[in-house]
Length: 102
Image: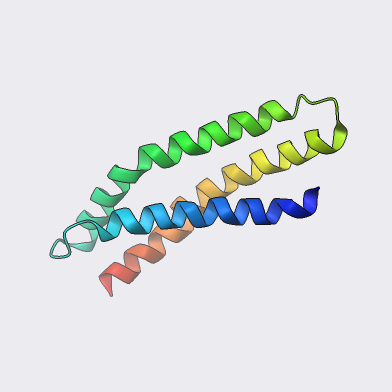
């Protein structure tokens, strides 16, 4: 069951990157890179945070299962979801900034 986990996490991460890049692309291209990043992340930040918190809550609630494999899978998926959220904001966002600035 744990072999499915990378595919699940990659799907969630790609969804986050699509949301961030789409919200930044919808800003005014004449504005500075800082303003575009600020406006784009202000639009999508709350939805990313709420989605991540909901996914983590569901996965960590699954840790209470009496089936050990399912409990371990849910813990790893919840932890991976947290890391993907942090990675989306600390690694992907600066790359988007430098791409806009370029």
